[in-house]
Length: 242
Image (cartoon, rainbow, N blue to C red; front, top):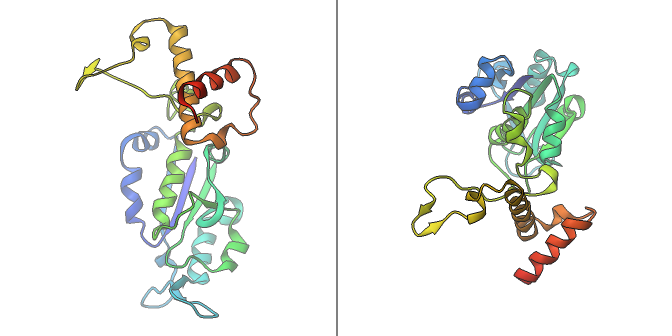
């Protein structure tokens, strides 16, 4: 996958691509990237990329001319262009999986009050929000998208590591433990050291369901609650009341 990110502050992003799993993915040729400074496409001596809003109001808006020039140079008309914005479609794991199949992605980072709507209408294919809150930095939101997407590209992370993560199968992930078995008077659950794989699998599934019921019951809406799943929900609600 080739990822191009357009930003007023590309230095914020550089360390992300040069560290940890992403750096290894780049070294192995699974991911390539370009960080584009939008100011390079401003035409005045002050490299001005923002201006006041028509109709009045606080704050500044990113101008269309530098953005359009940067997008054209990046080949935006032949790529999927994602604008990260609190006013967009809510990002989730399924959406990350969809974007992970793209050969090219262009991410557009907003600042201030955002970007001129005419740029969105002309170039943007996806307007995406990472949550119901507002950030001052589109770069932070872009890194969230990239981190969720690139790890789903085949070869970046082993398939086994992805199988039981949060949201896979519509449930949150189960609690996990490592050595030492006794820490600060707290012990690892007996089932995890029993060596009984069927019991471990059932315990993990039950814990996934328990955590989902506690924190994200909305994820269970629309699921067919049959057989073992219905029995486990009944067991958990009897144990924990509400």
